[in-house]
Image 1: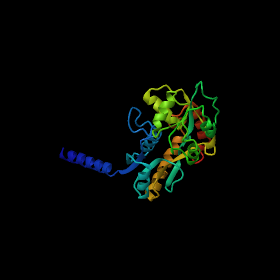
Image 2: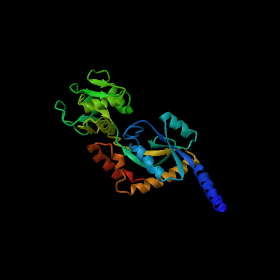
Image 3: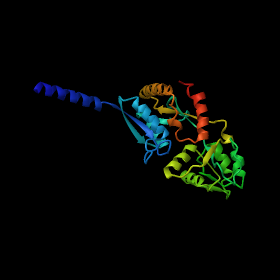
Image 4: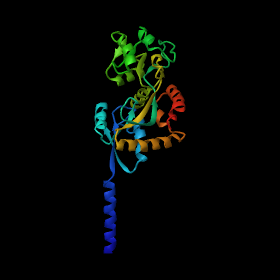
Length: 277
């Protein structure tokens, strides 16, 4: 019996040492629903939360920790070789990138489907012409968009028919309640706030004509430009490639988009997602 107890103790110590020896991977997250949802009833159901979950399940040999970091902090950590990976990186980075993990649509015009005083919206719609239309009440978050869109918007920023708010969720609620004719936003944000606040969503989204040179964004996982980072990206690529062979791989990535956006995204996934896989 004493020998058996010693053997069990030895096995327990060995197992504990293996668990303790697991290397830790930090995954950058940020409070930006529904791309990352850090709290509330939909916690963990954000687009990149789900991608992190897929990747962590594929790498059980590591301890995985999700850590809230802003853009400045995650770049600082990666520049210093910390074992951190950023799951929603755009190609304009000096760090090591995975194959494409998702495709995003840029900012769109969010409008009510049946606004009696609104125009017959055309897809794509010219932002310049929309902003110039004094009969329409619009909503913008100053300096939140791409440089090109910001330059167009700045020409109309002082007009009294353009509502300005630093809190984009305020504009989302206003368009959902039909208090504005249009806003400029990522369409998943509208879907998320509609569900979170139980507000009926009678909006649709339109492509912005001035965005057509970049109709979609390819997104990657970024890890530090180190031996560890290159090893991690190799593992991440294998998981993403394997996942892309599943028929429903893009369902979670399109969960928060409206119907018109989903149709467009499905086209882009079919045409673009497999090019690096």
